[in-house]
Amino acid sequence: MAETNRARVVLDGLASRKSVRVFEDKDIDEETRAEILEAAFQAPTAGNQQLYSIIDVRAQAVKERLAELCDHQGFIAKAPMVLVFLADCEKWRVAYAEAGIESRPAGKGDVLLAFADAAIAAQNAVTAAWALGVGSCYIGDVLERHEAMVELLKLPRQAMPAVMVVFGYPTERQRRRPKPLRMPAEQVVMRDSYRALTGEDARAMLASRVGERGFDEWVRAFHARKYASDFAAEMNRSVAAYLENFHE
Amino acid sequence: MAETNRARVVLDGLASRKSVRVFEDKDIDEETRAEILEAAFQAPTAGNQQLYSIIDVRAQAVKERLAELCDHQGFIAKAPMVLVFLADCEKWRVAYAEAGIESRPAGKGDVLLAFADAAIAAQNAVTAAWALGVGSCYIGDVLERHEAMVELLKLPRQAMPAVMVVFGYPTERQRRRPKPLRMPAEQVVMRDSYRALTGEDARAMLASRVGERGFDEWVRAFHARKYASDFAAEMNRSVAAYLENFHE
Image 1 (tube, helix red, strand yellow):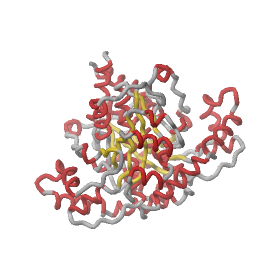
Image 2 (cartoon, chains in turn orange, brown):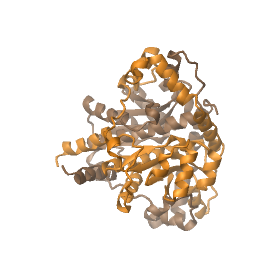
Image 3 (cartoon, one colour):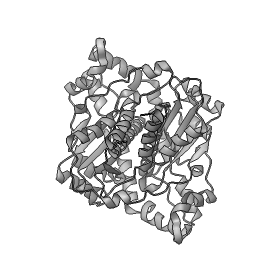
Image 4 (cartoon, chains in turn cyan, orange):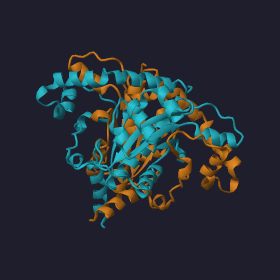
């Protein structure tokens, strides 16, 4: 296969991948699961430290509780594969202790570096899954409900969920669903330093989405549904509680 | 091309990708840059909000200052393409304001959700670049030097760097460099809930790395060089300062 063809296969895969929230009633076999996880491991990671752990949720009761804790999204419990990627500042502490070092507690920088590691690994899993015909959906709500999540997943003090991804084979309808358009590049990419967006930029960045309702009405409804929602408030509370466990 | 071949091309790309820190003296043309950025845009993003902005650093003076601020890593200034992915809680505030809404300040949950968005987009850029023959390296040190970084990149109060990636064509030597091994899956993946790692796990997870020096000596040197370093302390200080700008 020529190099340009190979490149095109990868670029097409990245471009065509879209979120899938309805799955066929079909399990994901162990070989496919292993390939998805292997892609995660092969992701870039700060200093080759793999500052994440992955909880592979198989127990139906745990899936159902996660569905409940993540803003009552029932489809989570129906996914054949559920992975929680943790920013894990605990694992290296164990290695340091084993070598006789009492290491300092992890700080807010350590946990954000680990958070990036976890998200980067997750995205490799998502890309690999899509190539294997397996759809996926990120669940941002995994950042909510700090106390209940710690109890359910038995999290140590210096580990926190970064992202959760659910996987499954897309239904025919999901396969046909058009991928939502992204913002124009002009409102996403800035040259050399931050460029403050104007009201006109805001209109341009959402032009493909507001439809017949018009900018003002669409943005107000979106704001009420998302940014001013109870779950957003809960997410902010919960993340602040996690971050309390990390020093400066 | 058969489906299985296409899948294999993607999986091979993810598995073979490794960090590249030495680049050929060869520019990346505009078409290739646009394909790398397009892959970033096509990444999954919470609620299709693209909660990130990308600073495309072209000015040599800015690259040089970034190299200095990121723990004096000179190769950053030699990279033909440098992207800083920001967790940007400012852009939607502008849209809300344009629709007449005075929105609440972003919280620590909002910024971590944006941080994940930024890292996920960056990893798509990295994957696309590799397919196009372009190597890359994440620079975790972009989290350091809060005040100087805000000044250099003119960052607004509610945006912060999540990851920086430098891109360029790998030298022959870099192409031949073996990719460092990852930890065994057993120390990375946990079933249903967190499994506290033991000292034995720590030894197993680093077995492929410690070499002739042995576990204790290798881990102590690594700890001193990384976790107990000045730059780690600076990263923790700097990230805490960024996070101060985000409410609960």
